[in-house]
Each structure stands twice: as C-alpha cells, then as structure tokens.
Amino acid sequence: MSSDIPVFRVDKFIVPEVAKDDFLKRVHETHEILHRQPGFTRDLVLQQVAGPGNFNIVTLVEWASQEYMDAARMVVTKIHAERRFNPQETMARLGISADIGNYRQMAV
Image (tube, rainbow, N blue to C red):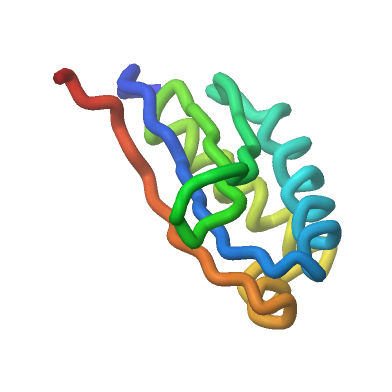
C-alpha cells in the first residue's frame, strides 16, 4: 500500500439496553471479518462505565494505512450484502444512534 500512516476508525454508539445483545453479536461478526484483513493492527470494543457522555459503546479499529482500511470496508460491505445484512437498517430498527469517523494520531 502507498501510505504507512496509521488510521483509526472510531465508532461511538448510543445503544438501548434491550438492543445491546443483538448489537454486540453483529459487532463481533463484523470484527471477525476485520481481523482477517490485510493491514488490520488491533481493535477495541469499549463499554462506558462512568461519566456523563451519551455514547455507551465505542469501537476502535487501527489500520496500517487509509488504503488498508478502504480495502477492508469494501470486503465488509460485500460480505454484509451476501448475508443480507444492512447495518443502517438494523441500527434504525434497534433504536441505535451512531457517530462514526476516521482519525489519525496527533503530535502534541
């Protein structure tokens, strides 16, 4: 790949308690796919245990570069389509809100 600057995909979710099990099952399935992709570095699935924030589940995936992350996104999209899984539809059905973005580490 052309760039060697790590990139982080950070997804923050507001997940109602009644939807948590179904949601986390889907997260686990998706992360199993991500683990097998070139350029995957590491991931975390975090649950809020204290603080005033609204987001109670956060996922973070580190990729070796933006190119690797883009390639993995295409693979995941294809597999989701093959499985007839629509993440946006599922989140709407379960009442889940999300804030999703790509990040790079800053020098401070």
